[in-house]
Image (cartoon, rainbow, N blue to C red; front, top):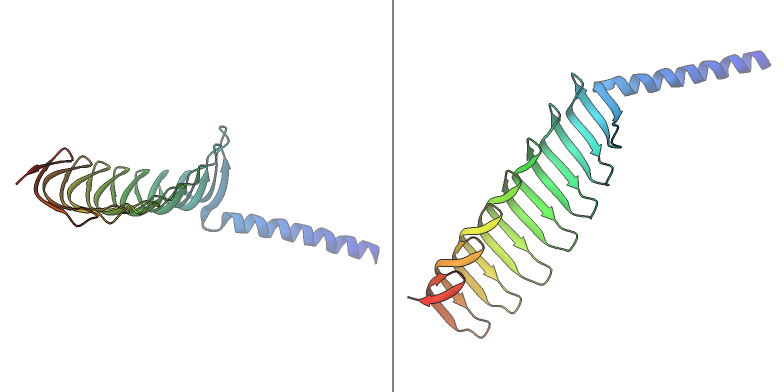
Length: 190
């Protein structure tokens, strides 16, 4: 009886190991640890990250999402060690397309990205109540947009490199209105 029990135990261990090996090879799921301390667990093709996978860096940064030929490509979530997160589209390891960046300090940008920077249409909201909604280029407010301050003041109009620049309307918290041309964030008249 004891030998039968030992034989069954050995068979159970072998079966468990074979099952784990089979699961690990399903859909080319692999875990790879790199010399620098980073680690990848996910689908691979031709020894490259390809498909869905999770990559962690030694500093605590983490990406979980789609890969193509060793590049973050497609939909994914990047979490920085400081608590910032980005959920959205990636092209060649850069934020590109629609996405939401949430900073640990409470600042949230939801909109379009190009080559890792805010470009296109988007909205940036700060915890203090400031909010900009409009066009972006190279990470700055550029083009048409609306900025609202916590005290209720509001500017609607043209922007250049993060400043009111061009035609616009500034409505103060007390209701005063400046309508006309702005240059480098200063109202210069009609």
